[in-house]
Amino acid sequence: MAELSASFRLGGLEIAALSDGVGEQAPSDWFPGVAAEEWVAALGLDAEVASLPVNFGSFLVRGGGHTTLIDTGNGARTRGQHPGAAGLPDRLRELGVAPGDVDLVLLTHFHADHVGWNLEEDGGPVTFANARFYLHEADLAYLDDPNTPVSEGTAYSESRIAPLVADGQLEGFDGEFSPASGLVMVPTPGHTPGHCSVLIESQGERLFVVGDAAPHVAHLERPEWSPVFDLDGVRASESRRALAERAIREQALVTGGHFPILTVGRLGAAGAGYRWRDAEVASVE
Ligand SMILES: [Zn+2]
Image (cartoon, rainbow, N blue to C red):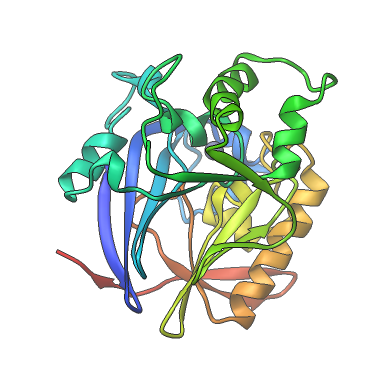
């Protein structure tokens, strides 16, 4: 069974990668238009596979006076659908963290698999009652725009976001935004208009949580490979490239919510793209 939780140190912080379940993804969704032999080689596989594991991951950052959660998974609606599904509250509890302990919730973007546990169930209550929530203004505007196509996904997202906006618990922001010392939300648009990655810094160590700028490390190695889920694939490619360049420049570790737990690495330049190397991290028992 896939790992559902792992913790490591970043400077003076403790970072926990927590799963809200591990599902399956068709490679054609992640690598549309890419010849099979290319993605098979990029993923280090021997042959084509029909599905790849997709973790629905959040990150808990503890230290510096805050308990911060990055993304809130699919939520209760996926219970029983796949291993670990709807397990985020249990994963937090295993670490001794009650929902009320979380004081910051950073949402990388509005998609349904990242905002699910904003509410305990349809209609509420708010799961993290004592937290301030942050989501980029461009995503809020997209959900509000009457021209945005209505789907089951956007309706679910709206149901998990609108009540928090209405009661003032969720704030929008524009540009690069620091909700607390050592945490920066870095706009990496394309997947959604307001998509952000989160740059975490402590004692000179840095970690980029890339959100859905890259659902698989192969998307960082080949920034031009845009998943079908990118609303604007060209812009998303530009964001992946900018993100990779910044991670290299800042000597930052990199991880992502859809990567299997635990996947942490560093990027280096390689031809027209980048290469991923797994990194050693100091694990926390
Ligand atoms: Zn996602």
